[in-house]
Amino acid sequence: MKKTELLVTPASLEHLDELITAGADAFLIGEQFYGLRLGGEFTIEDIKVARKRTKEHNKKLYVALNGLFHNDKVDALAPYMQKLQEIGVDGITFGDPAVIIARREAEVTIPLHWSTEQTATNYFTANYWGKRGANRAVLARELSLEEIVEIKENADVQIEVQVHGMTCMFQSKRSLLGNYFLFQDKAMEIENRSNHKNMFLHDKERGNKYPIYEDQNGTHIFSPNDICMIDELDELLDAEVDSLKIDGILHDPSYVTAITGYYRQAIDAYYDSSANYKKIKKELFNKIKEIQPPLRPLDTGFFFKETVY
Image (cartoon, rainbow, N blue to C red; front, top):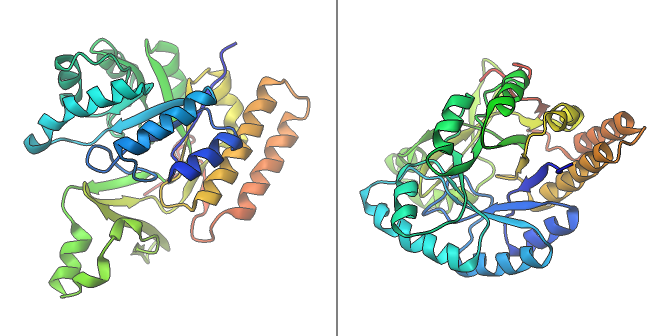
């Protein structure tokens, strides 16, 4: 039986080493020029080092090119992918068809993972992109567990699902935070806004605080809660979902490392057919609750249609 992959987003090369030890199977990295909502910034030189370390430990390394590219960036795609091919990365996560065209013109053969985060909601669309070069579909976060299982049963490509962490509920290409502060002559207060973890959009009516930050790709607003599916993992593993993702964005690296270790234990207990599996995952869920930041309540996202933004 092929085991489901545990995919994590490291914040740095040092963090990647910690996650390897914690039990991650694969990593998604990249840089803001090409990728959206990354756990950390990885230059080409960093990717070379990361590929060496992951190869030594028989782990997979994927690179994010999931931005929406304007004309001024299109010419950079082919040379970048050629460098990634030389390095030997295992996959490219993309959302813009320009990546498919640039990959073909550059004669690059790195597998493609289709990820739009909004429209990966059915197996027809997943298979459409599969016929155009993708071998994996990263499903939208707004799907129920039942819908995910149905897609997996009918998809001709691998299926990736996020099981832990924040989910992006809004993105604008505009620097909304920056423009707001500039209007108030407070530009100096928002340098390195993408590194800030204490900016929130307040919803007093619902009592929610939505994390918000900016990078080169614009403004991103996240859900008020973190997805946590460790107590329901067996249903995704029964369905043979190919990859389960822990998204570490805006979380401390130590938190992401601990969470990775807990999910590793839960997945291994499932495949070991442990008689204590239910007890083990319940204990792990309680451990997650102990380290969960107070401002980030846990829920199961849209898996059971609980989350309402």
